[in-house]
Image (tube, rainbow, N blue to C red; front, side, top):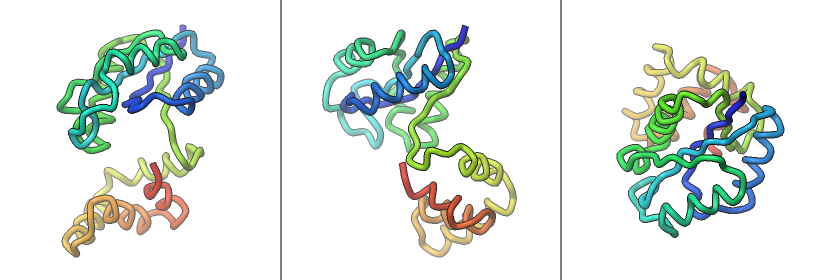
Length: 160
């Protein structure tokens, strides 16, 4: 049995989300899709446009087989913590075999290159140098990754 896991806000749910569910199911041959979705509050603590029950119903009507709530401390956190919380919920469910996610670059290779450098001492040193220079975290992260990879790879971090 193959089960896709998707971490989302669906604020609001739209056709791109439906497409993601359909396409991830097609690409992985998954039998089911489990979604971990933020509740009534989304990233940066903003209230969702529609309540969690309405958004969950939209997801279920459009292809999700199960919707689980991402606890508020993770739902309102920065992207990395949002993702960590979502993955933890999917892992705890014990049934997810594939993780599907949206990405502007559409290519897994640059993302794998980014992941390979994120836990290295060189990355952390570069990140610290850029942060100490007054850059925002996002810009500093992109600069540190660019120093370890290439411009095209680092550009992936400038898009959702």
